[in-house]
Length: 90
Image: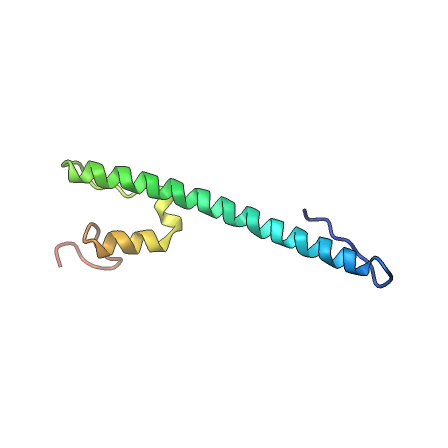
């Protein structure tokens, strides 16, 4: 998908532009799919960690959550984790 049609003019220019646009959209779709898979994995691992915590175990935030600040903020907002720079017990 990294290949691009290069034409400076002529009858095939509209086709080349359309193919390039389609290739760009397919690349963005692939990137979104990879992001979605990583987010789903992080959510599944976080769910297991929270279940374990609710059953009396230690809360260990999965490393996969580090790539998603939204998940860290969610855990903090739920009161399950101290904020960055917040001393324990304050």
